[in-house]
Image (tube, rainbow, N blue to C red; front, side, top):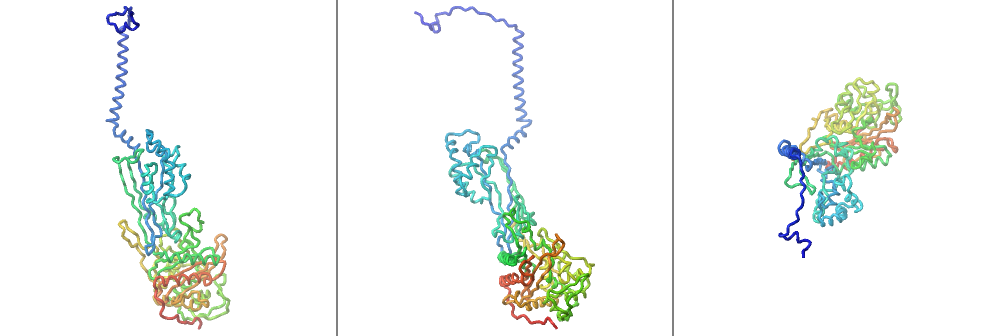
Length: 618
């Protein structure tokens, strides 16, 4: 019995013959089709071969460069801004090594498998990674997990370059990175972003200035010295992969050149004390503003330079515009009777006046179309020239100054540094106002007693009086002592050559007259225990440019000590006080407090003799 499949397996059994149908095709057509097929294949292979030749030979460099560019990363390496320190090396401004902490959310979501080929283990780690990383961020940077999680889980555009924190100390980030590594977590990276730090907060803020959001100096010394403080940024170029830097890939490093450091003549400790004293005086007198300076008479070095109101350099955006400027150099004012010190120095140096000259002083004196009076009412009186300074007689000063030519007065004031910038190098410094030698007579009168016609800055006037106290030799005021070179050595900066303005004899006579001012004070406002002090006050009307009229007062006190050999100069100016109306009552107490601190601070030897009682009237 045969089976259905036997016909397939029985070789003896032959399949029934099947009629075959022959398909006839013209030979020519068949050849043409084969030839066309061969041509198409040949063309395809030719194109492929041509592209291979182009890629591997003709455009090999270009193609390789394009591929490299896709994995090459270029980063700027910011330079560290130079330090600014005080005369004792105490840091006033420095740059901290800080970073921005960046997050790559895609890397976190793939556990570093940026190509998407994740294992089951990768998926398990990635599922819990955001919460674990958030906990580490809280541990090292503070905050709460909820503040970090949105950035750690972002998957939209920009998810590979998010920032989770800035101003993070580099040392803290290294600890964070180690903790990430120990936990086998990925997705965080640092970007170097040095931070300017002011250890003493707003101490000397108006002198130091501030930096803007771009890291460039925008005010004060930070602006003036920006070119050398800032340094030069470097660059790093390397090949990168989704899992990090390629160890054997291209790597180029151009190191950053850090900025140079500067040492100032300021004394941070004294600066803080002066700022506190001045601020309290401005508060007590309900004044608009105040300025104070302490200098080394022998060198012109500025030991303290205070400005009220001031501001927080780390949050300049919240500062009032008027508090940003350094008024001591930007705001010229009429100096008042302090100017009499310079006028008498010029007259006495020419031999036109002696301290013991007797001068008859009327109740008023005509100047131009107006009359000038003294601060106290009197008829015709007689005073010694010393008494004119001691009692601050405007009339007596004008009367004596008319012995001097206007050209001579002008030239002496120029030699004292008025009408010109001091050369401190700070931005916005004013020249003040000094009329030309062909000034009208009434202008000469106003300049002589400091009531009008002249405007000075605090630093200008301090340097001028300092020259008189320094044996008649002018030293340009100094704020920057030295600069640190690239190899760490201190480089002394050029100093303007001292110049003699008046004789040593004139210097001693004027300082003696200033001591008479102190001796005539019934309130002992300027006295400092253990030292002989010479001082002069000033009170002037304040010109309001808005109405071109006088509104308010500018009050001041300047002085030196010890009289026998002046070492320290203090000058305090209080702008528009509402309580008090004289330099003695308003600025005097601050002068006394500051001088009392400065003299012993620098080890100035107390006076060995008592102040003489010199007559001021014939």
